[in-house]
Length: 135
Image 1: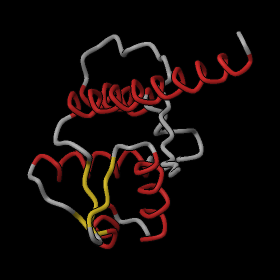
Image 2: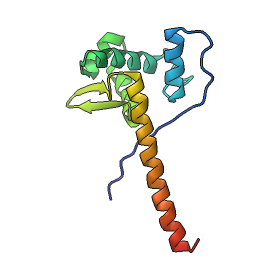
Image 3: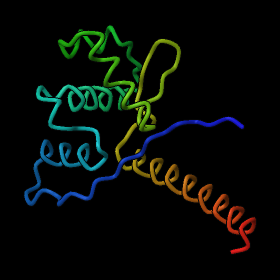
């Protein structure tokens, strides 16, 4: 049996009252558990936005290209990109990275499918355990 590890975090946060793209993007990322207080310079947010822009043009980027565009170290990029890959939002092809899909709505639809698959697997195993325990 092969286990693929994916960590999906959903945080129920009140949507911003005013329609401001930057605030809505911050809310979007925070709702997906991508941004935290330790990330003082908003590196993950900036990386996510850069990947979103590159996905729109179907342009895959290397960690070096991302580091240069964001004026961050390659180590910082790798740290945050691994978090984004673990969440299933970013894919790695060769030595390049790109968002899993090219728009935010499709991204959430893919996350929703991931959550459904995980819940289906849990239900299946729960039934097997219940059956073995005679419950």
